[in-house]
Length: 215
Image 1 (spheres, one colour):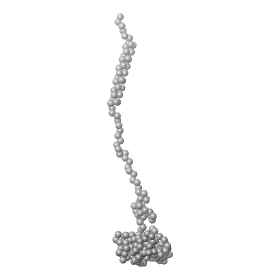
Image 2: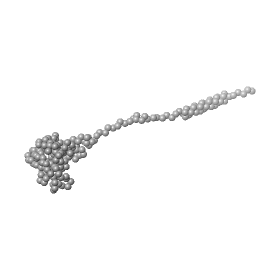
Image 3: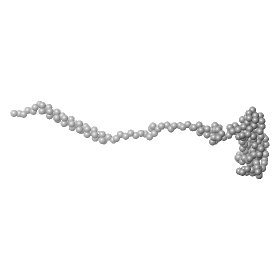
Image 4: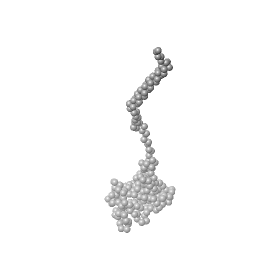
């Protein structure tokens, strides 16, 4: 009697065989994918230096720096301040500062010695600058009045000396009136061919400048 295989058994065998084949294929695919992944070099990103460089901000100069660069904009007492001055005139001419008219009435060659010398001063040959200040329509404050003198081609500053007693400028001059006063400076007798006298009547007002020979 020949044995016959049940169709049910055949179908079951076919299903088992198919499952084995599919499992083998899946295993091969997974192995291949893992191998491919391991063999692929890592991907790195490189940022280009300076690619996103921010623009350098421009810092505006401060008001104080701007003023320092322009001495004319500074105020008295600030570093770098330069007293404004008018154009020079001859020693025998008059000059105006604000509401005051200034003149050198005379330049006297003197010798300073003895009791006329105070500690720190140098005696000897000197010049005494005698001034007149005439006020205009208003009183003029002379409490801050100041004179300086330079001599020679290199404009050497002359050392100031104490004025003779009773010859100082008063603290003010009334409108329409004239006040007089004097300033003394140590100036070598052989260096008076060119002198410059600068007179400041009131701080903030242009100084007046006198130039010429005092020989």
